Length: 373
Ligand SMILES: [Zn+2]
Ligand SMILES: [Zn+2]
Image (cartoon, rainbow, N blue to C red; front, top):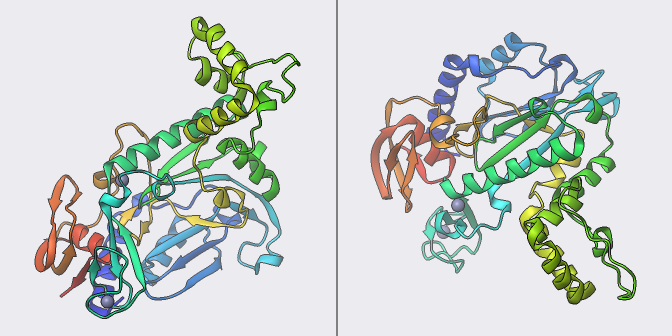
C-alpha cells in the first residue's frame, strides 16, 4: 500500500482505537490466550501476551495495527513458542463466509483488477493497460450475501442447541468485519476436543458423509427400510422433516422413496445436504491453535469492525459495523459499483477525485478501489 494510503488508514484507525475503546475488550481468560496483530504492509506478529483491557489499549495506541487477533486456545504460557505454550483447551469457533456460499449474486458485486497496475477489467484477458495476466478480485458489500450468511448462522445455532446440548446464551455471534460471521461457543464440555474431533464435528454440522444406510435405506431391496420419523432428534429428524414436510404426506412420500431405491435416495441426500448442511469453513473449526480476529477490532479488508450481533435478524453490518469517522477526505475513487454505508450511497466512481467521509474513503482504499490524494 502506498505511503499516502497508509497515513490515512493509520490516522483513521488510531482515532477509532482512541474513541471507541469501549467496544474493544480482551475476551474472558485473557491471560491464558495468545494475541497477535498486523500492521499495514508488514507481516503477522504473534505469540504476545495481553493481560487486560488496559494492556490492549496501550498496544493499539502504540502499534496502530490494521488487524488484531486473539487465540481461541488457552495456554499455560501463551507468549512462548508454539511447542512450549502448553495447550489447555480452546473455544469452539466457526467461520461463515459469503464467498464460500456459491451465491448467484457474487458476479454482480465482484470486481476484477489487474494485479500489477490495478486497472479495472471486465474479463480475465491480458490487462489492456500493462499486459499483465495476473488478476485480483474484490467483492463489495451485498445485502443478499449478508442475509444468506445469516441463514447459515441460524442453521448452525439450531444444530448446536438441539443436537449438542449447547445453550443459546453460550453461543456468541459476530459480524466478521467483511462478508460473513464468526461464532464462538463458550462451554467447558467442548473446550478439550482435539483437532480431529473438531473435524468430525464440522463434518456432522456440514452433513458430510451421510449415507442412505444412516436413514434406513439399504442396497438390498428385500430388506425392510426404517425411514426416520418427524419427531426424531438430530439429522434423522431433520431429514424426515425435510423429506416428508408433514405427517399427512408421510405415507405417500415413503412409497416414492422406496420405489426410488438406493441411488434415488442418494440423490435426495445430496440435495438435502446442500440446503440443510451448514456451510462453515471446516479449517477454522478444526484449528486449535488459530488466532482469530479480535471482537471490536477493525478488519482491514473493509475498514468495518468485527462486532457482536445481539439481534441477528435486524443486524445491518453496513451501518452498525461501519464505525470510522465522518470527516470528509479527498481520494481518487475507481469503483464501478455503487456502495452503501451508514445508509448513504457512494459511487459508482470512474477514476475520479471525490470528497467523501473517512469511513467510505477507508472502505474503498481497503478494497483497493481508491487512493488517498
Ligand atoms: Zn495492468
Ligand atoms: Zn452477494
